[in-house]
Length: 141
Length: 141
DNA sequence: TATTGTTATACTCTATAACTATA
DNA sequence: TATAGTTATAGAGTATAACAATA
Image 1 (cartoon, rainbow over the protein chains, first blue to last red):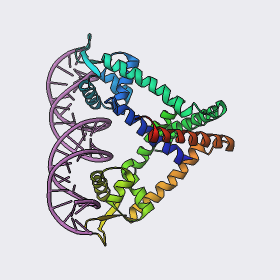
Image 2: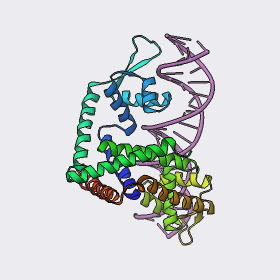
Image 3: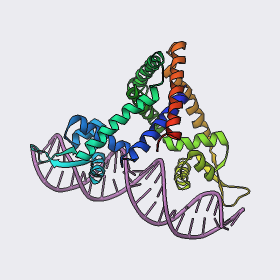
Image 4: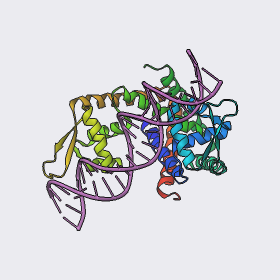
């Protein structure tokens, strides 16, 4: 069963990577866009905390997104050390489309399950998630 | 539901990455070890085909594994162009232990499910896998 | 001619450390 | 002193292209 789950992991990753590549995006950069859309303009420091990644890494991700025309940097109005990152209109469109695709993918993956199967599968996922959180948080180092 | 599945993806990846790091391994290099264990000594060309990765990439992966003492290169007996990659005794031990850990992880994730739940979840995974294969193989480009 | 594996080069994601400008 | 973001440096995974040795 773990093998099936791991195969799902691999295929989902391949599907998402290929899909994003068509828009000139990567998984890591798309996570940034997703956060900025949810939060509105944010500092790079906040992005680093939310992504659980170093500030240096955020610099690189934002550099790539600026070069691709997905985000813009602007000075923070109150703190001259800080930079605000915001979506361009183009990125807003792209991310909206990605959100639609997200819904469609769910429909394609689970839409043909019967309601009972879907509920049973959701239960299994919830169970697995709880176990994984236990492993990662409280598990043996 | 897709969100739960994606969270499982992220956490599983984090768990495996952390676990492998304790042995001085990465996910990509471990895939090589896994294949070599299954196949016996193989050429780098064969590894490139099996991993669906470029030959140049295999050179790098094998370089890293040689440096870590996990694999050895030896000349192919019949084809002087080719190189055979084989596991060191140390790697055999490590991979055996990883295989045990694989079993334990399955037990930790699914062992506390009731048999009916486990079967239902396995069904859901199989369904999802079929849909993913359809998407990736025959899906719209 | 075709194949095996390499060097050369490049891009992405990630990290630590040192530094600048600001708070 | 502390914080925000940068440059400098490094390692890992991935790719294409050119090339040498061999088939």
